[in-house]
Amino acid sequence: MLQAMRNKMHGWPSIIVLGLAVLAMSLFGMESYFTSHSDTFVAKVGKREISQNAFQDRMNQLRQQASAQEGANFDPSIFEKPATKLRVLDGLIDEQLLLQANADWGMRVSDQAIRDYIAAIPAFQVNGQFDPNSYRAWLVSQRKTPDMFEEDIRSSLAAQLLPSAISDSTIVTDAATDQFLSLLTQRRDLRYILLPKPALADSQVSDAEAMAWYKAHLADYMNPEQVSVKYIEVDGADLKVDAVPSDAELQKRYADEKQRFVQPEQRLASHILINVPANATPDQQKAALAKADKIAAQANPADFAKLAEQDSQDLGSRRQGGDLGWLEKGMTNPAFDAALFSLKKGEISKPVLSPDGYHIIWLRDVRSGDSKPFAEVRDQLVKEATAADRDRKYNDLAGKMADSTYQNPASLEPASVALGLPIKTSALFSRTGGAGIAANPKVVAAAFGDDVLAQGNNSNLIELGNDHSVVIHVDKHIPAAARPFAEVSAAVKKSILDQRVAAAAKKQADAALARLLKGETMDAVASSLSGKVVSVSDAVRGRSVQVPAPLLTQAFLMPHPTSAGKSQFAAVDMHDGSYSLLAVDKVQGGDLSKVPADQRDALRNQMAQAYGSEATRELLESLKAKTKIKINKNLM
Image (cartoon, rainbow, N blue to C red; front, side, top):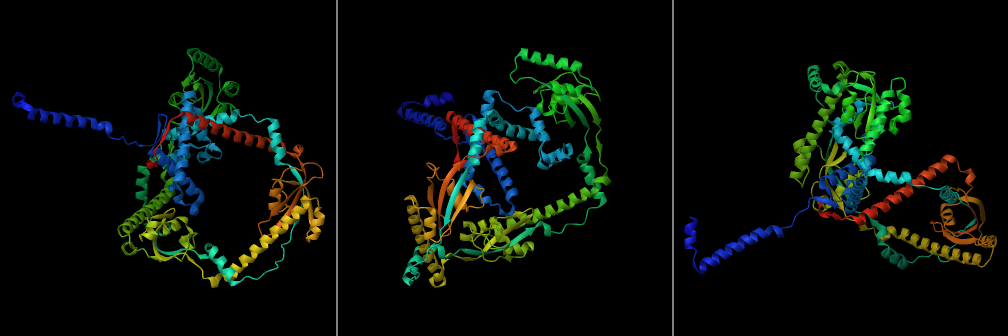
């Protein structure tokens, strides 16, 4: 066949055909060079990528935290704003920079640090002690394995290694602490006059003046935009559950989930740790092993705690004589785990090598695993079955409500009829909220959103709380409109008079201040204005009940008197249409002898944290300047 084609390929027509074919194939091959590559990461920090999943996980985590903290006041729309997304992404970028710095500088989180951190979490403690059952139940509720959770903790702690090291190495001198304390407790001698509001010579306001003011300040006299909504809701608390499951059903559930009620074997252990550096040389490893062998040879149950306090390099347990508490399989690293569960009660192991170093382990006691009987957990099973039935019904009904209102976006009626849910109506409310469901910011945001208000659609399913949700539809819409002039004319005239009084008060205060600056005494100025001079000695920043807040704030913004008898003066707006005159006569540093030692130490720690935070910020800026960072905003 190829020979036949060769025989027929003669002459210039054949050459043209062949040339076009070659050109087409060449262009086809070159296509890959011009096809754009679509990035799948939200940001790339050096060689480290921040995936969309990682970004969304962090957004969801922060959203859940905010929802738990703010309750009904939580506004989920905040997390849809570009500025919020950028702040979250900046945090993730900073973490990646710190993790890269950890890798470059050989810093890592030890397994022991992770174990200590988890043991200290209050949710996993009973009577102040780590409780394996609580830990295991929480893991099940979160659908995590111990390895998954420990890796989360490792990443979290790793991002804090450098900031913690910087803060721990920050030195705050006694002089710096004293200087800050002196400013914080600085005392000032003050005098002030509360000036009376001046009487107006002209208290008449013409209709023309009032109308001009009204038009110039129309936004102050508006009736706000309002809506009322129709809604249907599903509240899990109102749902009836099926009859209590029978004992046979409960027994089956108990048998199917029996592993939940099994207390695994636990071992009470102590240890002595001899650290091995992450990048240890052979000589360093031999030295650590020799030291561990020597301690293991000396160790016995009678003096193990004393040896641990003396020689262990695990700061978390050495103060307790090496006590690690009750441990289950999987709670420590594999090497430690294997050694611990191969010992007999009372035995002390030979040195066991783990990523942290060499451990000498003493098995002090053993608790055999056992199961809780059915009778002991029956009530728990009933409660769980009832809650599961209610959750199932709620999820089923809420899901059908969401589907039906989405498929029929112009009305709630089809969903109401199909599901037997009554349509309720709210009172009118504005963008600041109202009563009933309008007190929930999520409902308000949806009601005034474009999809519901402008397009006339049903809202999406709005979660009001646990097992409680609604779908809304706008019933009435009243646009914002200016209130009639006749209705607000009295308020308009009052505003004009208030402005005249404020202007006259300022003019009076400025004139009085000019007199003080020319050398006239405060007593003379006060007497001429029917005021009274109030003197306050040793006023302290933010803590003087004798001095009105605007005056106290201004007093600590003013410069020191230039010399004895040369006070500093100011006219102060009291934010109520009146003014005051203020004099700062004397400034003294705080009496540091009256500052308790614990307050001084607390301040020093706060200063160290502040300096450490600033140093960490500077480090991050330096790392950013040296690292290529690419952000894909379209994937956020």
